[in-house]
Amino acid sequence: MRATQILLKRSAWKGPYFVAFPDLREALSTHRPIRTDARSCTILPNFVGVRFEVHNGKDYVPVMVTQDMVGHKLGEFAATRKRFTFR
Image 1 (tube, rainbow, N blue to C red):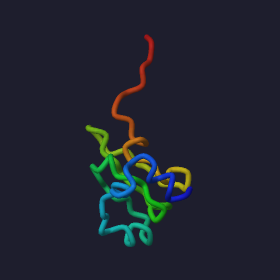
Image 2: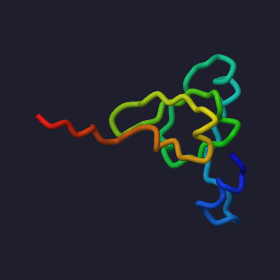
Image 3: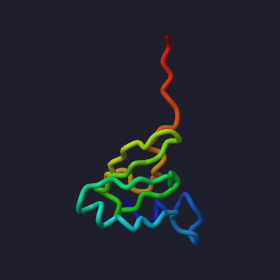
Image 4: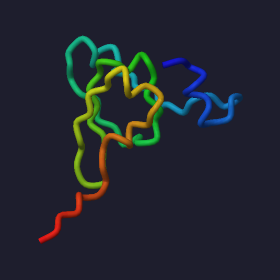
């Protein structure tokens, strides 16, 4: 995915929104997940292969970042509501 597609959703002078994760290199080498509440953080190409635990309001949902997720938000992969089931 090109960087220009990431910038289309936000004005170009602002750039993508992301949170600096200080344990990113350590998480890549040790395969430990990074716990975060930052659901609005944009997934960057250097996050590929990192495991996150994204807070959904109640629990931390495990998310493994792949190449297809680049440009999306972390919160898109942690549902905040239960699926509807008809009784």
